[in-house]
Length: 153
Image (cartoon, rainbow, N blue to C red; front, side, top):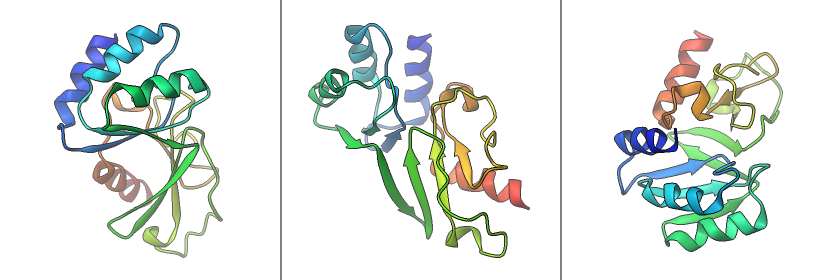
């Protein structure tokens, strides 16, 4: 499974891309997890998940200088949109239909292993980025924007 995930990751991520990993990088065997993470392309920015212990976080950042731990949450501004990145689904504001999408904060998350990227959409602007929701591929932020635009059409 891990080898296939690395293969799929590297098929869509280039060595110079920036990737925001929304937590739970590995589980159980730390040595194997480090080995697989080291094979993944990109400048990887890791947010803390519930399985990311302090020991694991230190192992992530010791792999190579292009892997950074950036904390529990992160605000990403991209093409006029504002994204709140966290491992956990998070309410980030009122669910105001009258505001344009680029005037709302969109929560990007993982954690639940849902296969539906809109599993929490009824609660607010929450989009699931976990691999389970995207056929074990990382998802491009432009594809996320397009998915959301299609959803609210």
